[in-house]
Image (cartoon, rainbow, N blue to C red):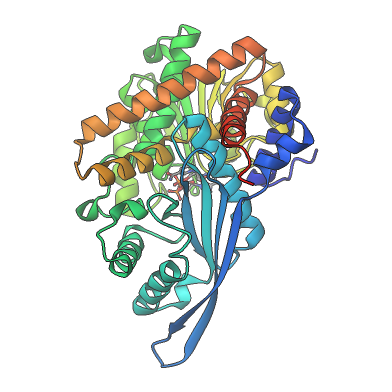
Length: 421
Ligand code: NAD
């Protein structure tokens, strides 16, 4: 197996390995591996200069066996059917391992959004929903933001869908502005999930978190809040890296995470950040190899490969990013006894709060941030408990256990529903 596969190819390789552990038949694999429905549509818009612009829009529903499909919409020139299919596949197993009653979907438009005026962007967003209004909906398939789409775009999409159906339907999409039924707690949700994973594993390993040290790669939405939650729990943060480099310290109190977050809020990245006792190693990748107990890769895929796996010293790795460890490196680390909370479990806090947004929209009753965090903690804790149980019972890694749990749930739902002849 190559070390240069993309995150999705890694996930498929891991799915295949788990299917082997479960001894699935070819028929069973085909039933749950292939996407259920693919819709491709022409998206015409009127450009500001009066011309007609034509774009290609895609929506893939990988599985609705366990509930309506769920997954973001991406606006990017490199969007392709293969990519959207891959991301929809991934969503099915992410939702299943978290045990939220939803399947997997994903959408995209092949477009460079920087080439559009604000008015053209709004037209494209509204027309996308119109073209796919027969396949999406609160009980069918619920989109969300992804690369280059945001809360404003979700608001336009919800408005278009609601006006066309004649009802107010906020539950047709998540990631909306709070004023239109978005959920409190969404911004920190993925990192909170990462933190819950670390906490539960610390309990399992008999660790006192306030005696532990950590390093975090990536200091954006996921990495910064993950570092903050660990810091607040008393973990000493010894190293943080972002696109500008790595920032490390030997001091007992560790890095000042709130100060570093404030720096990024003002400057965009950590570029230029200095503090007493903080140094910058020549190789920013060395943050992964620091002598710490906990490592949180929260930047990019394929960061831990066969080249550096042997140099990793952390005993617990929490995958904030998707696919940061290649399958070959994963095997090496597992053989050395390193505990890895796998991406499909570790970073599922985001989709879990999206589900809670949908729940609140359907009730028409909105929770406090405290209630949202409690509900999501309950869901994530349950998922981690179940994955740990299966990992112990079958003597397999947490990653294989997460896939085994997810595959069994999707397969069971598909088989119980049976064939409608
Ligand atoms: P982001 O763009 O907010 O942050 C990315 C961070 O990585 C930035 O700090 C950037 O400087 C840093 N970075 C980029 N290249 C780097 C390099 N070579 N070395 C070190 N740092 C580097 O993105 P995000 O939303 O925090 O997402 C991070 C990862 O988590 C991605 O893999 C994403 O797919 C995954 N993820 C995000 C969410 C979510 O809710 N945001 C949910 C699930 C998974």
